[in-house]
Length: 186
Picture 1 (tube, one colour):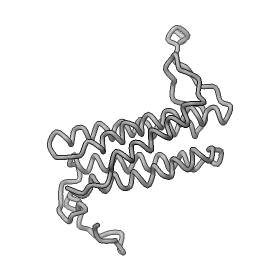
Picture 2 (cartoon, rainbow, N blue to C red; picture 1 turned 60 degrees about the vertical axis):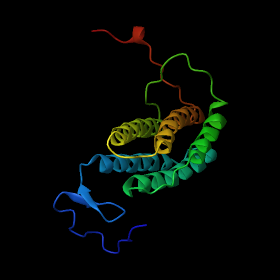
Picture 3 (spheres, one colour; picture 1 turned 180 degrees about the vertical axis):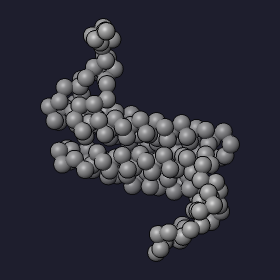
């Protein structure tokens, strides 16, 4: 793995480039940087969800595990030819999904993001995950990125949707269902 920084600023990025984990330098707006930067955003958004004290313990445990996974996933994107994400990571997400989704009522309508701050932040993390998925898909068109990375992000967005529902129910908040006919018309 790359060097640990003891000094936070290095000035090496002042020219618009950044160092990858293998020591090579690329432009800060390169697709690879966009991809792992967006994964970092997901991790930060999950951190905001976790800052809520009312999160159920099983949800908290799963999201902390996801944060560690995302750090690994980001490192795989940051270090060319580095492989760490396996289908086992995705299977773990599927186990969380099955566990959390079992207690939820079936959906017949779309859910609007919102409700409590924790629920809204979970939906935000979900949408950032979808953006990360799009960035990785774009990157895959020009560089070799393993499909396991994409599988993980796809399943994570599903998990965050389900967790948002779990949090809403835990806080006794009503989910806001999309209903086109009830929109106020001016």
